[in-house]
Length: 194
Image 1 (spheres, rainbow, N blue to C red):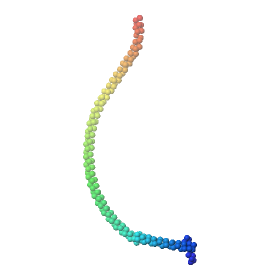
Image 2 (image 1 turned 135 degrees about the vertical axis):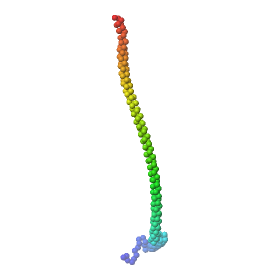
Image 3 (image 1 turned 90 degrees about the vertical axis):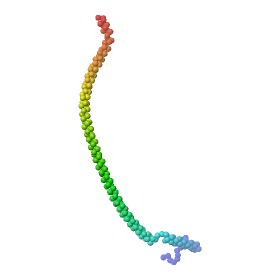
Image 4 (image 1 turned 30 degrees about the horizontal axis):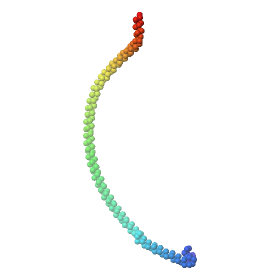
């Protein structure tokens, strides 16, 4: 394609003097140094980092650990399940006993309360009969007092009416007398002169 002659790299070859050759040697030396560093880096990577084989072995090891852990967890869960069943059974029995005891106490309390209520109702009945009797007696007395009060009010009205008439008469007399006092000397003169 290009023929047999080498194509110059721009900036690599000089103008036909030794500068171009020296530049090329420097570039080759730099490449050799870089390759040496790359080889060292690859050796470090191989020694420090995992390979496919390492990852495969690790995968198998992790699978084995997970399987063993899974079995341990299953055993722990089954053991815990058995413990919980036993605890629930024991708790159920305790609760049954507590409920039975509480039921007996409540029955006793209800019976005692029923008896107390009956006694209180009997006492209230006796008290209400006595109160009813007393109210009937007081009602008769109250009727008599109301009748006496009506009579007293009627007497008071009559007295007020009589007092009112007396006051009116006294006022009329006082007015007449007050009008006559200034005229008395004239009347006495009239009687004495005749």
